[in-house]
Length: 295
Image (cartoon, rainbow, N blue to C red; front, side, top):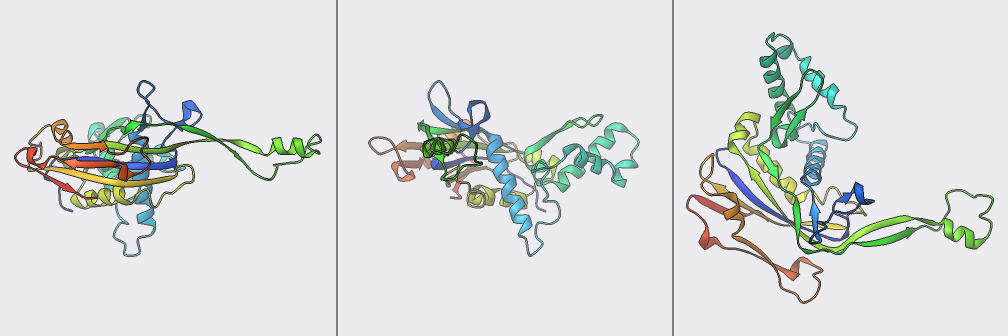
């Protein structure tokens, strides 16, 4: 495994058509919006969930056994996190250590070795008596839409009723019973997320160049392996990577992100990625920083 030697900052741009990219459970699962300016929001937790799902899919379909060791996912459906932590503490290499702090460090090391998402994003370990934290090298911001979005509630129905009640004998009553509920969609939204990769923290968790390659693959392809009718058509449109020539970096991340301009070029409401242009001011790139478009 090759170690990371460079700090990396990146801009990830994706869009949604006629779907709900990230529902808010406090608002009847309507698409998340900033109430002050009506720009759409997709949380970092939502995006990391899709990365995890992609890695799970890749591991499950791995016929060449490239990702069998060390690519399990810690936070996944039906996982009992306390039980997974206890399993790590049952390793002989951990049990034989008497010092409490050293025992925790060895357990953290094994958690990072075994689980891709822990050595990538970090993890808070809340198991009683074993509380600790792993700070991951990759951190994401909330994604925000470039323009205001409009959320539209739609009623959804079906032609059958769940069960026949005594008062559903007439067609008019049965017609009312057919209404199932509502779903909310965003007709179109283009979202921008910023990401940061620390080579220094990568050394601590064991995050490698091979892990980074898998992470880039996830950002490129994760929407295609995790489709849902509720999410509509979600697509990765741009992945712009700024690479520093040192571990700690050569320029502030915000100055690099300012070099990327996303502008609407259509009249009226945008309805596709072609209604926008994305440009990079490469002339303003600081010394010892390179830029690459992976999408």
